[in-house]
Amino acid sequence: MPVVAIYNVQGQQVGDLQLNESIFAAKISEAAMHQVVINHLANLRRGTHSTKSRGEVSGGGKKPWRQKGTGRARAGTSRSPLWRGGSIIFGPKPRDYSYTLPRKLKRVALRSAFTSKVNDEKLIVLDQLSFDAPKTKEIINILKALDHQDVKTLVIIAEKDDNVTKSIRNIEGVTVINSHNINVYDIVNNEKVIMTKDAVARVEEVLV
Image (cartoon, one colour):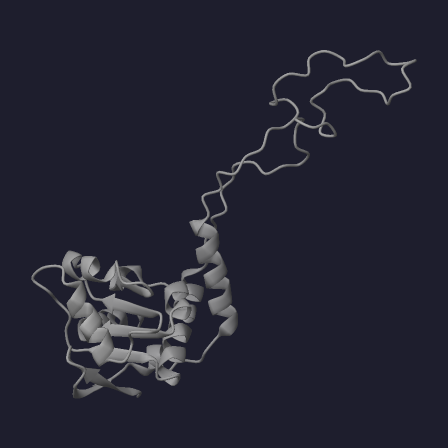
């Protein structure tokens, strides 16, 4: 079983934690991670882009000039896609980009993402992380103590905590999510991952 150190908020090691090998020492599937990341980004797309087709653009009801005898090309409307101010040929229309993937594939990708962080020694476990009120300075001091102040970092907590979330959200390069919203994209998009001990337990409970 993989073993990682447990740190307190002062950056001092206070113990070790054995991780579940089926999650944090699994076989890495780059193909699964790739598919899940592409799916995550596609689901984020709003799909509100829109252009006007020939039937939607305004004007152009009258034929610009007679069919023959002018020496110019034939034209039936000034709103042709060939004209300035005309319609758009095969332009984008509002659409839904989201699609679903098998649950098993998502779990394989999550296990692969966590395993890659453990293998690269880029996963740190905190004994606890809680505040009585939002304290951004405290978070900055914790990141400095853990030597994470200059890298993109993902902080994973067990449950939704408004004080922790508000303390972190204004720090550039630091993202916070709870264990219910863990996704492969956030894990691979951040160089280092900080998890609370409770968050590790929750992840192991769900993914085993």
